[in-house]
Image 1 (cartoon, rainbow, N blue to C red):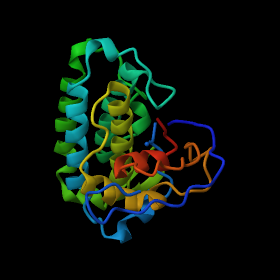
Image 2 (image 1 turned 90 degrees about the vertical axis):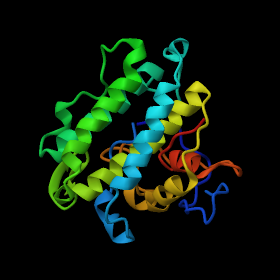
Image 3 (image 1 turned 135 degrees about the horizontal axis):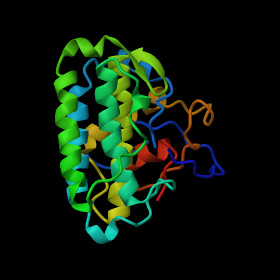
Image 4 (image 1 turned 60 degrees about the vertical axis):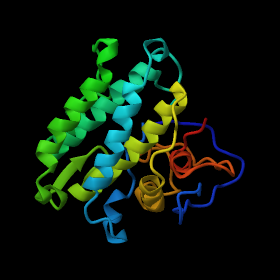
Length: 229
C-alpha cells in the first residue's frame, strides 16, 4: 500500500474507456468492495484469471539485476514486491478456504531469485482449486478489510493484482498496461472498491493521483490507488 503524498488538486473519479485507447493497489484493503457486485460483475473469476496471467508474465520477465531496484510502491523493492504478489495469491486461497488471510505474511521471502514466476504460478494453481467452486463467490469470507462475500473479496484482489502489476512493470521497464478491456472494467469499479474518501486508517491508501493526460487504464487504476511513477 503506497502512501504517496497528496496532490494539490483532487482527481475526479476514474471512468472506464469505451475503446482500447487510453482513458482514464500494497493495494490490499479494498474499502467498500462489498458494494461492487451490483455493477454487473457477478463472477470476477475470468477477470482475475487474466490479471494473474499478466502478472505472471511480468514476473517471468524480471532480470536478476533488477530485484534490488525501487518500485512505485515505496515500501517494496522489486524482490519484496514479487514476494507480496505471491503472498496475495496465497491470501486469496486462504480466504476461499474460510481461513484468516493474516495467517499469510505480507510478503513471501526466502525464495531463490529465479523462482518468483514459478512460485507465483504454483500459488495461482493452488488458489484455483478453491475458487473453481462458484459457491465461494456467495460465501462469506474474511478479507483483510473485513467480512464480505467471496465475490467482493476477489474484486479487491483483482484490483490489487493489476495495481501491483503496474508497479512491477514500471519498476522493471516492461509494458505497464494490461489489456485495455480488463483494466477498463476494473477502473470503472474502482471508486466503489476504493472510495475517494476517506483515505488512511482503515482504508490504507494514499490520496488518488491526478493521471497524466496520456495515461492508459492500468496506470489510471494505479493512480486511483495512490500510486505514481
